[in-house]
Amino acid sequence: MRDASNNPVPGARVTFRVLSGDGLFSSDTVTNVSGVATFSYAFTGSLGQAVVEATHEDDTLTFVLRAPVLIPGNNGQGDLILFSDRYADVKTWKGNPAGTVPLSGRAYNLALYDQAEGLVVMVWDVNSNSQIEDTEPVRGVLATAYDTPNAYVHPTLDSLQVDVSPYRDVEAVYGPPDRAFLDLTDPAVPAFEFQWDAVGLVVFTDTLGDSTVRQIDVFELTAPGGIAKPHQP
Image (cartoon, rainbow, N blue to C red; front, side, top):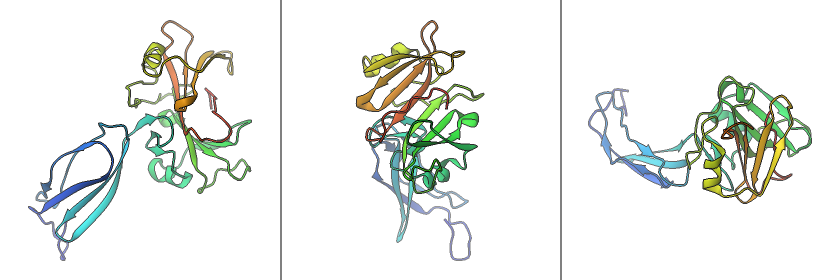
């Protein structure tokens, strides 16, 4: 906070109010010697986003918080990306991808963040031109350890994590899958694929030992064209 002469204002009381969200946040605070007011917000509920309002006297600032978390289904999100976002929003939160590619045989284009952080964003190809456009909507996110030096590191709300959780932990949360396959898209890297239609979830595991989760795909339930399932985008 700064005054009319652009000097820091210490000791000013700031009130925080959650306009939407189901987490917990710290109490009101005062600005420090640099004019900065800090607070904490814990995403303890079922949502990975919140809208917060900060107020000092007659001045109000509204801002958005998002957590890097995987939440399948309608009103869900993948990392910082909501299924209500457009591709322009993806770039606002994640920056420009390393590249984009059409998803073969499906009405989607993929924005590739996989090499940097094991993340791929699936955008509905509304115009059916194999070109990703700023106004086109997000329909899913793939969190992967395949073909990347940096596996995705953030868990689901149920603490399931790529390259960490065994398949039995997934079934303990979501129950038996609707379908299960042996995926030989890449014969050199076979995978088991499990689909849960009611929650918009697809999980790929390796075929050894405890079948460690190698990719978690979360989708909006109303995503047109069905569930995408490339374990190597």
